[in-house]
Length: 268
Image (cartoon, rainbow, N blue to C red):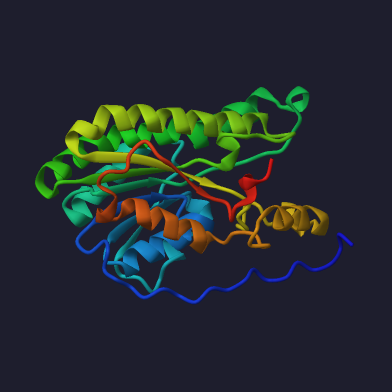
């Protein structure tokens, strides 16, 4: 059974552009593929100038050839100075910064007793420390923008595993719990400047990172059956949730975790 070819994910009709981010400048990390790729394109279609960040080996420089609003930046979020360089590019290309979407992430599966220090450190470096560094670097620019425009946004990509967990996910789950804690603290600290800080809790999303795991028919069906919608999520599903939190309509929402899991966590 597990050798069966995985079907293509369900395609959804594109939603009309409403120019919800017209005049905004956004940074999106992990933008060469998956959720970040979908979000960069959606934000650009909605009018934003997007600084699309990813590792040089990811192909980021050619990932969005048909979008003149997307400015690729080949930068590893782990590198010292990466956050500052990215904010500087946003200021240079767009003249400010309205939205920071920390999306880049990695995951390995190993029981705790088999998890090496280097694997633990790498997941925390990408999933947690880089999020902190990008937030820290972006705060002055976001505060300046919010002072002029009345609002600015930070959106951090966590996971439903930030509130739950599963076998083999000790490093991933712990690193995503850290993202939630950071987001809540920043929401308290930055609210006075009209900067909202929220986080996403995606469930089973079919991306390049998860594709290998979902080649297992039994695993895929397990997660499809958990969802009342009877399907895996797509990068577009999460990108649309990020758009909601990035929009002007969410001025009174901060410190919130938006679950994007097709209802999977409704079950005990």
